Length: 140
Image (tube, rainbow, N blue to C red; front, side, top):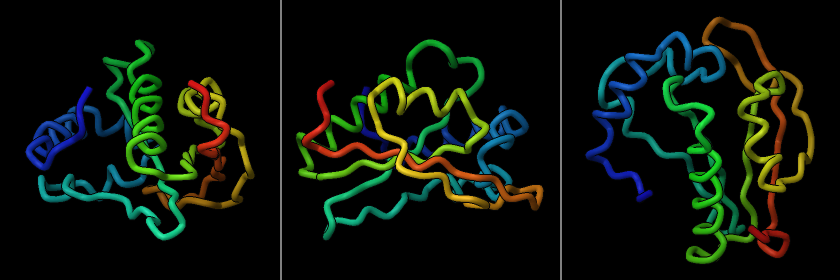
């Protein structure tokens, strides 16, 4: 496992292209990812408040192998141990049980459900489960 680099954008874009329908079920950014440059984006981190968010997706061919869980564990360890963050947040669609199992397996606490928290590419809103982990509670 290694940190993602800008040079990985082509592979990320190709994976989205190959699995567009499958990934688009829960990930609204897929519909807006139409050219390579769309894969070169990063989420903001709140460095002042020492918190960050982890988002993940994995192509259908590689699911159920523990990869997303291992990557999330690695990123959470890195956020707390190497980067000094105090909180890590994960947002999952309420109905996306595969995605929700990851923070639950790692001991994240579900803080709340945000009703109509994300607009999907088909125009419907979905509720989001907000999970968080505090550095002092991380024991993996």
